[in-house]
Image (tube, rainbow, N blue to C red):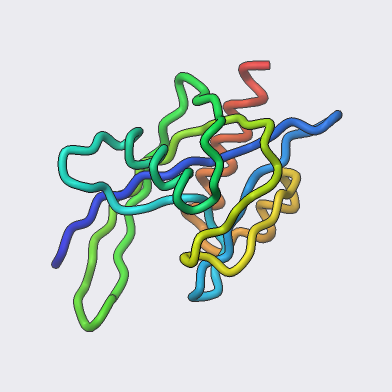
Length: 139
């Protein structure tokens, strides 16, 4: 089994009364957060920052200290089983305009409950649940 490490960011911006979270639509049809494979000698945060800029064009964001969530899952790619570990960070931005890369088909900013319904996979829903709970506890 091939092992891969990735990192990503749960990005949000504040509206007048609630946070909105960024979701990206992947070519396979699922909705998830910004994430990508770690390159040689990159830290998880460096990967997450690079992926944010590459996939959304957003370079202005503030990392929220104290939040780091790890998910693990297996999937098949070209007849190979892959075990993936993804570290997610939480970040805030004032930027709402996204410049999608070729890696995604669409994006949406959604309030927590709508984002929770839109996200495809349970592990990503759990990351959002924990991120939202973290935000509620620090405010």
